[in-house]
Structures are given as C-alpha cells and as structure tokens.
Image (cartoon, rainbow over all chains, first blue to last red; front, top):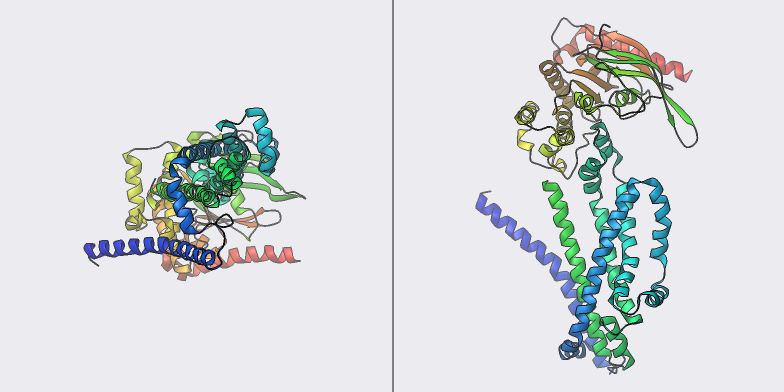
Length: 265
Length: 266
C-alpha cells in the first residue's frame, strides 16, 4: 500500500467511524420526535398536558430572550459546582489512598453525604446560606464530589499489584509510584466517577433551583408548570439536556485525549 | 566462598495471613560470587522467588542477615539509592506498562533512578539491537508477541547497567524454542557484561544449560537441600543439550527434586 493510499484509507476509516457514532443517536431521536408528534396530533392531546415537538420548538424561539439570563445562571452554577466537585473529589481520593487512618475517618462521612436525599438537603442549606447562587453550588458539590471521590479511591486502591511490584523493585518513591503507575492505571476509573458527577451536578443544580430562589432554569420550570405552560417548561428541559450532553461529551473527549496523552508520554 | 558479592545467612521468612502464619523459608544459607550465574530450582511454593525478592529488598526477612556488595541490610530501613542502582529485577511476566511504548518502558528505570546521559541511551540502543527489537522500539506492548514482550522486560531490567540481576522465571511462560533462544541470548549478555545473575526456574534443563552452579530447594517450608557445580568442557550453546554430561546433571537434579517430592508425599 502506498503512502497516498494509506492516507486515503485512514481518512475513509475516520469518516466511517464518525458516521457510525453520530448517525444512530440522531436517527433514534428523530424517530422518537416523529412518534411523539404523531401521537399528540392523532389523539388531540391538549397542549397543557403534553406539548407537541412543534409547540416546544416554537416556545424555544419565542421565550429564548426570557430564558437566556436563567440559562446563563444555571449553566454557570452547574459548571462551577462540577469543577469544584472534581477537584475536591480527586484531592481527597489521593489523601484517602495515601493515609489509611484518614481514609477510615473520611469514608463514612463521604458515603453519608452521597446518600442524603436532595429534597431534605436543599431546604436545610437554604436556611443556612440563603437563596442565592452559593447554595446551589454547595448542593452540587455535596452531591457530586463523593461520586468522583469514591470511584477514584477504588481505582487507586485496585492498581494492578504486578505493575506496582515493578515500582517497588525500582524503589520508586510515593510520588513516582503515583505518577508513573497508579494514575495512568486508574484513569478509566477516575473518568467513570467524573462522568457520574457531571450527571449528578445537573440533577442537583436544577433540583436546588426548583426548591428555592428566583433564577435559573429549574425555577423557570416550576413557574411555567404552575401556569400550565408545558411547552415553555419543556423547552427549559431541552436546554438542560443540551448542557448535560455537552458536559458528558466534553468529558469523554478529554478522557480519550488524556489516555492517548499518557500513551504518548 | 571467598568474598561473595551476595550472602544470605540463616534467613527465615514467615508470611502472616488472616488465619495463620506461613513459613516460606527456613534457615536459608546461600552465597553468590561476583560475575557468577547461579540458578535456584525447586518445586512450586519452595520460596525461590521469595529469596530474590529479599535480595532486591522488595520484602524483608523475618530474621537472618542479607549482605549485598559489602552492605548488610537493616531490616528496619530501606536500602540506599546507590545499592538500588546496583540491582536489577526481571519478572516472570514482562510487566510492561500498556500506556508506554517499548522504548518508554525500557527507559522507565532510568527515570525512577534519576539517571540520564548518552551512556544509557547507547546502552538502550545496544540492548534493543541485541535482542533484535530495534524495529519494535516505538510500538505499544499490546502489539507485541509474548516472546517479544518478555525480551523487552529483560532489557528493561538491564538498562541501568546493574551489577547484580535477579531473574524470576523470566522465560517460564514461553514455548520451548523461544525459551532456548532467549537462554542463549542471556548467556551472551552475561558474558559481555560480567553481571552476577541469580536465575529462578523450575526447568532443570534450562538451569543446567546456563548456570555455573545450581541450588536445589524443597518446599513447606522452603529449604536448600543441595548445591551443585555445573562444569562443561564445551562452550554453552544448544548443542550442549545432546551431551551425556548435560543429561547426567539433569538426571541428578531431577532425582534430587523427585526425592524431595516423594518424601513430602510420604
């Protein structure tokens, strides 16, 4: 195979892979929208009960200027909370994996934080921190960082013992063991936690907005539902879903890049 | 032996498990001369690998003393960096990191030991050439066969030019032909470098082919039951396998191991 043929062959493979990744989800979403539209039209379902996709698309453009400031608030809160969760989760995971006593002390607390139902947590936090954006970010952190932390701790603790033995035979110090063996061996576990935390950040952020305060997409959904404006409420849901997909996709891209980077180093 | 480079005196090793203690080694006394290639053979579970892990300071003995190149190990302290650099360890499996290329895997000990320079780069190229792996230097372990992975694992253990090399059944998982080829390549490297090599195996032919001396061990607990000098008038190559003396040595060692196993059954 000549160089030129190889390049052409590789390009064809890349395009085929891309189409294979993009076409199936788009086709499925399109099919679901068609079924939804057909069912609503055929059965004359009232708009306040279940809005048609066409109604939602109208609401998306009509109420965009109204929703935009809330969209910005929600997206910012979720991203800030998520980033803080990842940092706290990873730092604590390194400490827990390094110091057994600290691990025994912190683990029950972290598990408990993860288990607290959001509906009970948010009102209590609002009593302490008020109704502003801080309380939403705190809610996200409390709910999301344990997921990063627990997955990272498990990944660090389950490093392949034969790989670690090589480090021990070379008498690598703790930092070298972490840098050259434990971290690259744990990357997929760490990213599983980060992906779960991104989903939890969305849930926690929007739930906190629905519980109290007067800004954010969650707050708008509560408002629209109160007045039976289902199409507008669902347009807010779509904006939330878009952020969720973007966040998850971004993390997946970063995961692929980091794993490849580690392979290159 | 006068001035052994490695000496193990009255060493015992007990492992604590959840339910009980397991004595892996009992009263081990061994000596290894500078530049010697010595094999340790014995049945599975006799503590062969434990001995080289003790020498490499991966684990500590329960009691007894280990002296390497004039330094007696302190059981409460890790060994010095200088001593670490004098030791090389090759595992039963290649133990290559899948996220690193062959070259990066081989260079890893240098990064850990903080060594760099043209001397080591030249050694890297030399070793790759020696095991005929120059073409595969920039591929990832997943793309290599078992034999090639093992070769990469072997040269990684030698990249920092250790004076003493511990080899834990390095060719045990390979087919006979590949194993024989690698044994001959090991002999070439040993002659060229003059390293002291301790070779763990349960393949008696392999031990007789490459070693100057063989320690025979028994299990439960691991003890040294015999020590044999292996001497040939001919050069050590694959033709040696057809030699009568080679067969005699093999039979002698197999009988020693067989006797041990029979005694254990009784």
